[in-house]
Amino acid sequence: MGISVRFSTLLAFLLLILPYQTSSQTNIYKEQKGYSQFNPPVFENITVKDGLPENNVTCILHDYLGYLWFGTQNGLVKYDGYSMKVFLPE
Image (tube, rainbow, N blue to C red; front, top):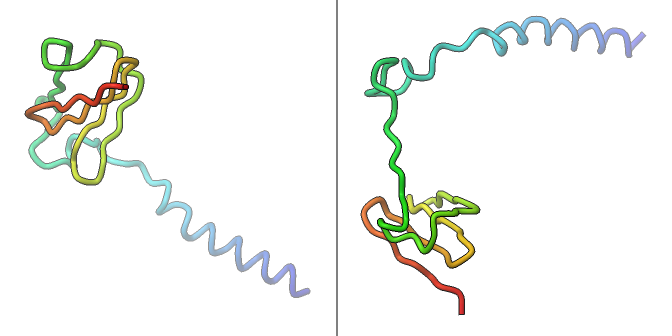
């Protein structure tokens, strides 16, 4: 008897909560400040001309300080949005 009461209570709870969790989400562009469907975010292309050791980037990491780290076969790059610092392998 106790198991069926627990199961029915859990089922009722899920049926009350689930519709709120799975409601349709609004467009991402409408929720972000400054962006709309007609003004999407702009992406930059960073190449060897900008300071990368090579054009093939194998991994990208965004750290908690805001730096972007690019891993290449020829070295590691720390990018702050304005300049790059290249760490070459020894």
